[in-house]
Image: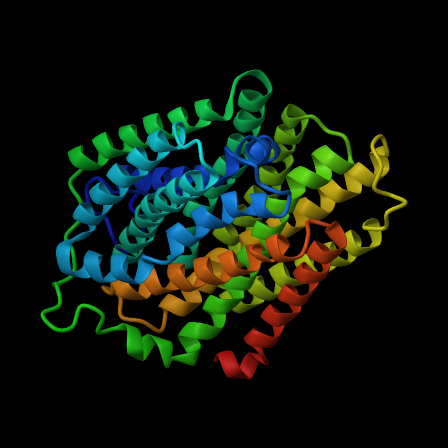
Length: 400
């Protein structure tokens, strides 16, 4: 495989890219594998329909809250040490999930599982940033989108089969095995040379980044898009299984269509990002989400939410796929636009991108726990998030 950038021909770039994609794949697997099991997990642990969303939210919070510390640790102690510690925590928390009988303990393990997943995922982004220049960064980040897609579809598909024939605990054991394989690969891999480690404050880059509107605006656009996708992921199991009558395995099969939609968006970014520009692609993604939210609002009438209505089911799947496609356009371009205004060797900039996107996304995903999983509320939220992204981008002259 060729190197990650046009101007970098370092040995082992293909193995590094494989590791980065595998880390992204595994971090998302912590969510997608569990989606078909959400109703069963809620019943087993005595959670209400609304509170069951915490199973998704706690992992997202765990992945988000420590990210500023991960960025500082990556700059000060090195990428490899951060990755190894994160994978060890991910493996341990995944294993302890299987024996956590009480809801509070189960949610705590999900949080710790998220901490490990977040450390692994942000390391993959930092490594790609280390070996990419701003001209091709969005293209290289789109490879992580490919991994995200595969995890989104295959995780939901495999999770549905496991829930149909076995138990959700098998998914936790599977995550342990995947994490162990990544740990072995990381220990054996020689990482690329790292930027000089800072001798000043461990968090020295953060204040300047938080004052930089060119960093924050595109970053928040990506966060809103991620929150919209999380809302759909969290509410879809109840919509398709409880209201439209699909079995866990049938719902899991929908992951194939959703992943293909994300794949289409990532392929488009990979092919045209250099000549089309990040802003144009982000606006395209937001426009697709706006159309999808309007379709969802139309379909949310109670008279249409009945099992057996194939046309309604197909339109819901189309809208879900459209949200997935839109976020695939937004994610790599929002991060590349933000990082273009930061120093190349700063792990803190990459970590702050991931932190703000995760924390905003997790806050948005918490809304169903406060309100409900009714699709009209989800559709309205996606509509407002898309409009907010358009306002953040502003006129083209503000982005030049």
